[in-house]
Image 1 (cartoon, rainbow, N blue to C red):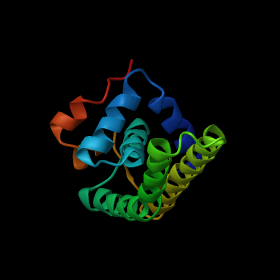
Image 2 (image 1 turned 120 degrees about the vertical axis):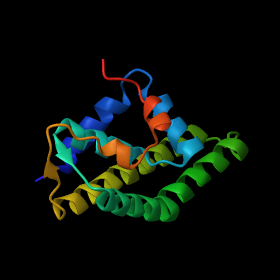
Image 3 (image 1 turned 180 degrees about the vertical axis):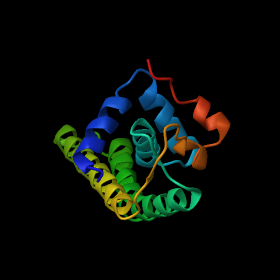
Image 4 (image 1 turned 135 degrees about the horizontal axis):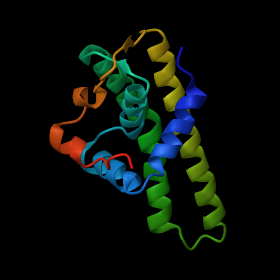
Length: 147
């Protein structure tokens, strides 16, 4: 059984690796890829668990729905505040609240993905390559190698 807290810890550690944040944000902003899904596929690889294309597509669908209905509107509001309301006296405090809310939503999305996977039973595989089901070879090259 996969654990959402364990995945969160893994995701935070990998996101903090040198060059990872920039690479993942570029994939999100330029290629419309979901960072949580990329990190999840990396997490599964690290645990020698493999998904099939259908499972990855289902996870992508879950991410896409949540992104469109929750995360994208949140990010849009944060951008508008940054562009048009920095003069607001409590802007810094409001921005921090917005960032905290977005982070909580990211964590919730990760828990949703783990809940889905716990119903799917990923297969043991000593050489998984789950990212191949989601990213092109060129996109995969943008992710920094583990050091």
